[in-house]
Image (tube, rainbow, N blue to C red; front, side, top):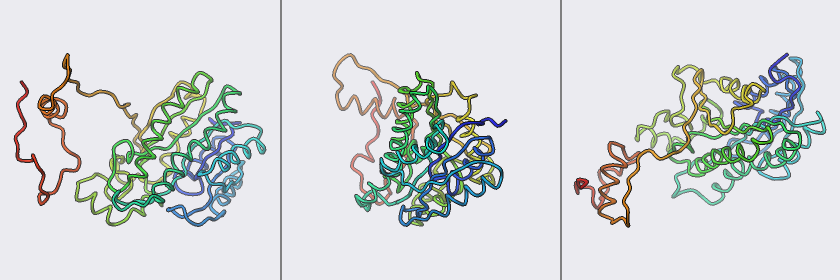
Amino acid sequence: MGALEGKVALITGSGRGIGRGMALLFAKEGARVIVNDPGVNVDGSGGDGGPAQQVVDEIKKAGGDASANTESVATAAGGEAMVKQAVDAYGRIDIVVNTAGILRDRMIFNMSQQEWDDVIAVHLKGHYNTIKPASVLMRQQRYGRIINFSSTSGTLGNTGQANYGAAKAGIAGLTRVIARDLGRYGVTCNGICPGASTRMTQTVPDSARQLRQAAGVQGAASAQPVQQSAYAGLREPEYVAPMVAYLASDDAWDVNGWLFNVSGGQVSVAHHPSPMRTVFKPGLWGLDELDDAVHNVLLRDLENPAPPRDDVEVPGRDVPARALA
């Protein structure tokens, strides 16, 4: 028996890339899978039922059980329909993996409201749209696994991805909250920050690549700025799947509310944001005092991730930092 024998899983965005790798592994481990993918382009345009059905065909050919779904995660109706299909087809919903996403990279001063709204709708709202209906059933059955997909673009930041980064940072926060909301009912929620070569990472605009390279950003050729495997060759999206399958298994019953960086053969757990350095004054801070404290204590030896160019006139740049009294 596989680690997911008898479980029913919904995996969004599983017609290609990382999602496809997970769908195949989940089925191999015994899960019955709803393969969701509307078959859109990387920017969210278009639509094609082929990718989802192809993965279903692969699973069935290998002896597994799966059903295709082409709904969009960007709507509440789409999320509800996916969960309903799982229950109608297989009687329950045990696992939800939120992988679906789009990219519309642009520097914030050039980004349209539509580009912002569409990315937030698919990523951040898309997570809500599947988690909400699934959580009702998981709470009732006192069992469930929810695995969300965040990104180092959100947890650390990445040039030209204000919409994507904001959504992914929101997903990290959502993951921690859902873990606390549902943990008492036997439902866990964790997040993955993946590093892999996918259709999405290969479509980052050249302008964004150049800016990232100029800034010395690690992994400038992809949409993942820091998350890389220690072995450069292990970039296939299938390498992300095992950790997700583990988090979906009964063995991970007490793993809840964490973000894991997964790339190639490398897995790490991300530290939750917490105070790194602290200053205290028993009274109201003065601005000069804060200047001292920020430069000489809070940010001592820490670098500005994107300092202004030499040809930009910056008031105060040539003023030496004050010595902390």
